[in-house]
Image (cartoon, rainbow, N blue to C red; front, side):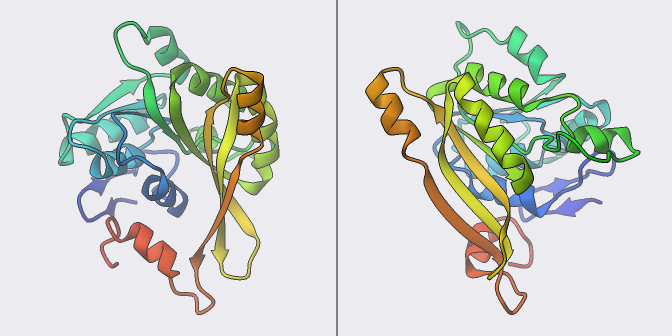
Length: 249
């Protein structure tokens, strides 16, 4: 279903995953405002790339990587119709192919990577193959995603990823093998008083010396936000976060 934001429009009718509250929170919360080179892995309709374009510096360059042809076409269209067609570049293909073509000697590493990944490793899959691939790790496993982040993220960069609670343990357990750790962990609850059902992880490289490794891995900052208050309206945190994007806030 097409969705109009304050500064851009998203046509996602051909995409496996429609515009979601999860993605909007990720795009609004991630620390993108000072980033020079941003990578959106699994860009879909281009929502996160365009949110990044709205929030980042004028000279920032954003690369959107999308494998699915229908989603890539929608992403291309949405970028071209946005106020930032020169700021966002689309790579139509797998992130694994993008890694192989990426030349570190020519192009700077990314100081922020953003991703709303396929996150279900098991379970019943949708009959629509595009939706199944968007939701399940059929075409991008956690290990492959973390390998890409490890190779493409600048030494002092951040990668922001949103995951459901049931996928957190598996994702976090695999990070150390790729030289990564969770620097920030934002728990998201649907309404005040409920248990978290989503989390945004801010992932960074583990520093090289033993002392730095110990200090880094022991310092995950834990945060929490509620989408709605006890009266079922948006919480003030949600209003402040999404006001630059949602028309009615």
